[in-house]
Structures are given as C-alpha cells and as structure tokens.
Length: 126
Length: 126
Image (cartoon, rainbow over all chains, first blue to last red):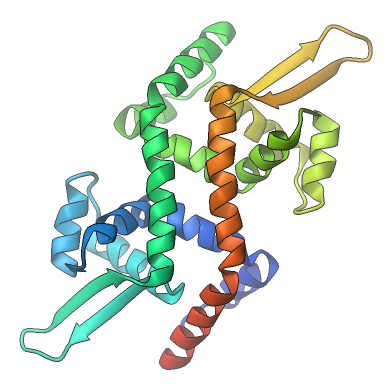
C-alpha cells in the first residue's frame, strides 16, 4: 500500500474533504489549469508552472501522484528511449479543472475588493 | 496591526492564493455554505457546523475573523445585554459561497469515482 494508515483514516472520516484539498492546493490548482489546455510532459509542465510560481521537482511529482490517485490526472508512460511520460486530465479531472479555474479566476478578479477590506479591517484595529 | 509580518509578506507575493485557501479551508467551506442560507449567531453557527464536523470555539472564531478581514463575512455586534453578534455574508462573500458550494457539491457527488480510482491505483502498486 502506498498510503499511510493515518491518511486512510482521514479519508474514511471525511472523504470529500481531501479531494477538495487536493484540487485547491497550491500546485493542484496550477496543474489542473495547465492540463486543461493540453497534455504536458513532466519537464514542460514544470516550466509552465514555474512561470507563475517556482515549483520543486519533488512537489510537482507529489502533486501529480495525488491527482493521479484521485483519478483526475492520467499518466501515460511511453515505452521509448529516452523515456517519455505525458500527463493529461481524465474526464473527472476536466470537471474539477473547470470549477477550480472559475474559482481561481474569481479570486484574482475580486482581489482588489479583498485588499480594500483587509486594509479597512487592519486600520480599525491598529 | 493585527497581522504578522510573515503573513503580510505572503499576501504581497501571492495575494489571490491566500483567499483561495481561506474559502476552501475546512471551516471556511462550512461557514460560507451555512451563511449562504441565512445569518447566524455564533453559538447557532457552531451548532449548525457541528452537525457536519466537530469545530472548536477557537477554530470557528479564527475562521470568522479571517473571512471578515477578507471582506466576505459581516460581523454585526448589537449593543444589547446579553451581547448579541450576528454573522452574515457580504455581497463578495455570497459570490464566494456560491462557487465554493458548487465545488464542494461536485466533490461529494463524484466521490464514488474518486474512491474507485484510488482503489485501482493502490492495488496496481501493492
């Protein structure tokens, strides 16, 4: 088993919670949004995400494994030399990506309002 | 200032990221979904959320403060004895709640597919 006992227990108690965490995680959001456009090889995907936010090889690998395990990302390892691995969205992943992109876009669009609210909140308490 | 230097720095670097984290946090989701129905007093809200998931007074207080600071939740402290505080969504909070509810509902509805994918993934690796 690739999963720890702890993780399995959390999954049993609150299963939908973890999926929500995976798709809204820092790299989860960026991976889903990138793969919504087209399939990517690992190094290409890393470069694409790096344009927004620096991501380590390890973090990206873990994010992809998590999303693959949830059935959102398809990993296609081609038996060629040098090895070639393509990542794409499954049908389920496409549904997730669409919603996460909508939410992320909304957050960006409304950021000025949020910042204004924060300033007012902090000033009232300083 | 109520915020730490660290938090302010993260906000400056990646501002939209934190809002996304707030609205998709464990209690953030449940608070937004509850307040989408109607306004609540603190203790009522805590009972409503407890039906889904046990929440401590401290965690709920922090969640409400964070959402209030982001301009998503309105806190109305009435000058009566005993003190009465009502929480409701702002216009911005209503927009966030709608999207978060859609995403959470999707996650619940597609949970069986996710669980099937996880079982297949784990079995292929055990």
